Length: 108
Image (cartoon, rainbow, N blue to C red):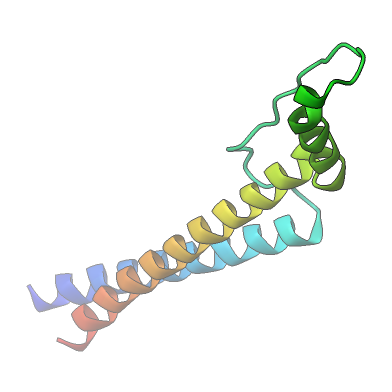
């Protein structure tokens, strides 16, 4: 029984380390531009017709100017990178926990 626990512990340790290294490698590729971040947020394109400017349209003008300063695709890219980083953190944490369980089984 103890031998089985040690073998299972080694399997969990290797599995946990593989999860951690795969996550770090994937994150590295995303941040260096070799692969794209998961697209959880997608941009919405809206077409507007040009018309005369009234005082009531000031809100729409300001919104249009803000979209020029902060383009929707860049905001979506930033949100996708944030979500990708959070997911990578969760995966690394989970891989560490799995490896920790494997180490406990090996020690016992």
